[in-house]
Image (cartoon, rainbow, N blue to C red; front, side, top):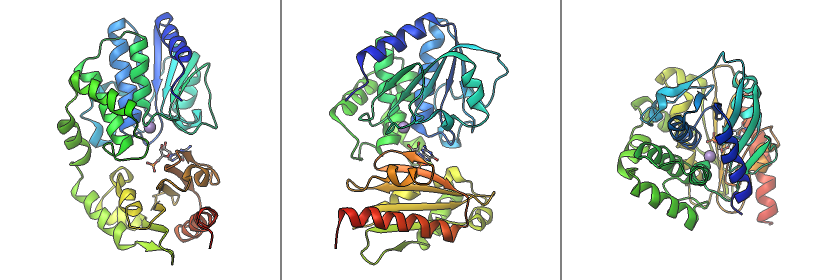
Length: 329
Ligand code: 5GP
Ligand code: MN
């Protein structure tokens, strides 16, 4: 499935008819969330649109290089908008408790997303769960709008694609992903420049955090479930923040024989952030949903309000059930 041409045309028409447009992405924004949001903003401004770019959690350090990142604000006083464009968010609540009501002040909302969709929302839904990234769908939308593809826009979209595909390594990569990426490079996106910013840019504290996480590594007897944690004390000791754990979970899933990899982080407020990754077999979005989270088949997350040790027991128990269904005996 790809996003329906009708939905793309409807979204393009809604944009054409609107003057004030609010754009929003999910909390803890990643390269796909901000790359998708900023590429739209950079394309819409020259069309004379008044754009407001909302990210409840701002811009993480490693994504500040994104063209247009200075357009991002955490809140707005504007009373109303003609249109809202919400990107990379499986449910409207994912934009955050502050930003949610600001987005709802728009007369119409367009939902542009590639998540396994349960909580679909919006008057116009440009959805494609087979797309590796929301950026690919935004690319199609910009084509429908006949918006010129500048090097800045191409950089934002390419960043969305490489972050959500782990540099074209994940199962979600399709020929379409690669074709879009090739077009973006032709338009001026620089793969080495973007990769250097996104992947070769870990802070010292963040790299030491990886060490702490890996030294906590555990696995089930059959090796199919592997997990690690980072405690609030680890964060404090190293002066690191949650955004610096980006990518750590891939080491956990990367263990030979692991069908499910889980990273637990104990936040300051005592809540436990959980990142889930799988190989082809287990649907971790379903696991995350049992705990009020969501995501994709092979990458999902949730937040628990119980102590770290209990969270580990709970998630590993659910992972065992999922794994035993697929690998009986
Ligand atoms: P990450 O582990 O990188 O935080 O998230 C992996 C995927 O799961 C992302 O696509 C993200 O949007 C989704 N995800 C993470 N946490 C949550 C959550 O609390 N709720 C929902 N619905 N999705 C989440
Ligand atoms: Mn995404």
